[in-house]
Length: 87
Length: 87
Length: 87
Length: 87
Image (tube, rainbow over all chains, first blue to last red; front, side, top):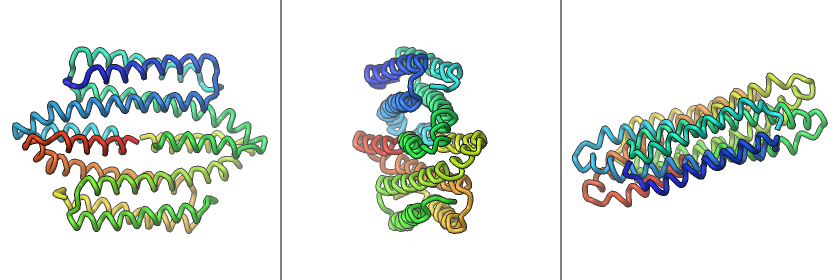
């Protein structure tokens, strides 16, 4: 992956730290609504990491393939990812 | 939280393990599309954990409040969570 | 449906009007990014209508069922909807 | 827009027809859960139309820009769309 590794690693590490905090909240029997808010915040960080990976992919592999006239396959691959993102 | 703690903890721990694996993939410079797929799988596990927390909340706090004729506030609170889930 | 019919109808009508506008944009060969933005705005209006329907359901049918000690089935039904919303 | 106009128009027209049907369901006071399911189905059709528009954009404008060495701006534009899709 040619992405901005450092930024992506930082986001993933942040999400991991949030999950540790949420496990503690569950053990401490904290209010469901607070736990839910934290889970959604964590999912948002992971989605942000995912967008960063996609941006890197478009700037790297996909752009190269397009410049070589072989863009179709890479664009199809990205569209499949978007279909999953979009559920 | 009155939820099924064990199930929720297991889902959160699974997501945490997935993030560890993804950090390793980033370090190993793996293909962006594979990393993206793993990130989306992790986000799906976190959303599942969130729905379990919500189900527990509805069966617990919210149902009690409704039985005591004080449901409005709890339903408003859940609707705010749904607005966030729904972006 | 006991929901606030008027509010829900208004949202659905708004979305319908937006789709008419978007069909026109497609015919006029407008810029893809502008069309995409309009489609996402329309989807957001539909999700808002959906949340209004859910709120009405929780205040109505679901609360009644819970007061009669028959909440489980209604909560399961709502959780299935949330699973779909959440993809 | 260079997209597959016909496919995109068909999806948007389908969504429009679904909204007409849902308005009728609301007027007939149908069960909230059924209305919610229809609203979510409609949102899914709109998201599919949106992905078709994006695919067309990537194959058209974005690929051309990349081939001319001016991909950055187009990719940034697509990333902003993804951020909205992703909420």
